[in-house]
Length: 384
Image (cartoon, rainbow, N blue to C red; front, side, top):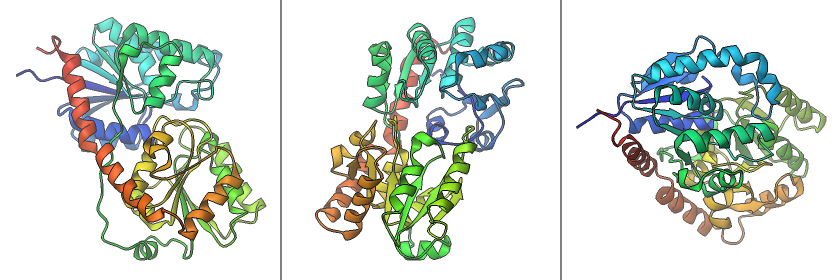
């Protein structure tokens, strides 16, 4: 039986949502390798899972170029980008499949995979639309995908529809929902708050990197209408959003929320923190391709309030597993929080349904089995 050698490619060494998925996906490919544009926590995390990791000599600092940056900002980097392409191509010769885990990784891997004639899988963790990417970026992504990708993996129908709406070939799409491990917790929420040194009293939680389109500022404005309610903001400015992070902290002071809001930064114990809050908020302004924290909260039996955009309606089954509100609406968010905290209506039934749905639809083994089948299909006639 042949062994398929997969090379996973990531543009960043940081660990955010897409990289957390990657750390699960690699479990489907024993003996795989990874190529990272730059060093960081992801390097050590992949190595701990048995992967051989190669770092680019030319990729450091590329994460500061945002996905909505003008294409003109890339022009001075053509030499470095070309060098990375040849680095990827050199490593890809020793593998059967190239598996790109981000938009930047995909663009360069598409050219490299053409040079060495290797099949290319793009795991697309974004909604390709005008809210997230410039027109030229969208065009380049779609043209390269239609030309070079063997398969485009997306985590939701929302991400698939956005890809096709931009001109992407529907036959390339493989919808594989992100899978989440159900981590047991023996401590009660009250015990967890003491252990984690969290505020007493009513506690809200938001868990995502700090970025304007993630909507943390909407929560701060909603808190002005929720006296006595505390909030933890878990996550950091990972990809050049430092100005937004500073703006949030300034807002906390200006709105008089200094004693009710805590910024906890990037944390590795999110499932435990999740179980310690009374309500989990998912306030994204623009559509999300998935919503890992939604599923984590559902598994934890914590009430969820999310904006009615992107994949959230599918994950929450159009509101049966959580409350959906309009995006960028502090008043609606505050009203939904009050409703949940009142414990009225069908809250208990909603939570029971949410746990069951998370376990049956977003199990990590289902995702790994689907990825394994995909890799086997792509590798047919390639591995020797």
